[in-house]
Image (cartoon, rainbow, N blue to C red; front, top):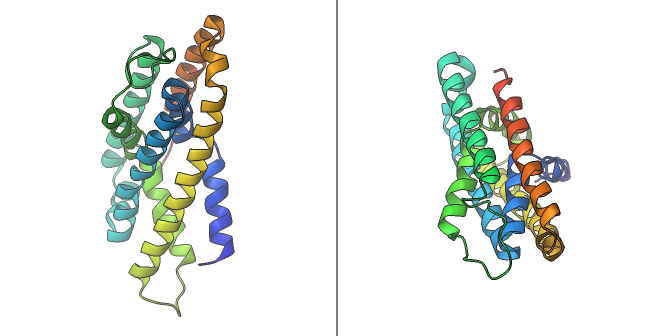
Length: 204
């Protein structure tokens, strides 16, 4: 496995996107544990895209305008739902004071998986990204892609854990200031709307 692949994976994981925003919001809501659960869910959300790339199903999205558009707008709708949930102060992303009722880990994981699952650009990305690092003189291509996918997911999980830990560290300061809490809710809602708009404008 090349250093170039690991560095590229690190850069991609660190770059803020829907998974990062979701993980940070979950950590602010539930602390380090919530951030870890969200990081796990976002990482698991990568699995279907990797599987699609490895089996050739990912090729359907660039070739089919209907399939790409349907999946894209499902993703847009879900991001807008997350924005609405954040503003309404309910759901897995609700920022709640310390000692409040804990959010279900299952709910957080499912939401996190959907964040990545409903993004057709990820499938196309893996279709183009993974094969670049498969060596012609190495082991079986399928085995190499499995190894590369596992490494990418491990890097993603560790980076997201770091984002969650950082958010959990400032959580007490956020929860103790109602005005900051309100501002944070609006900021996360706006971030989900912006990410939804970017996805809506995405081309194959």
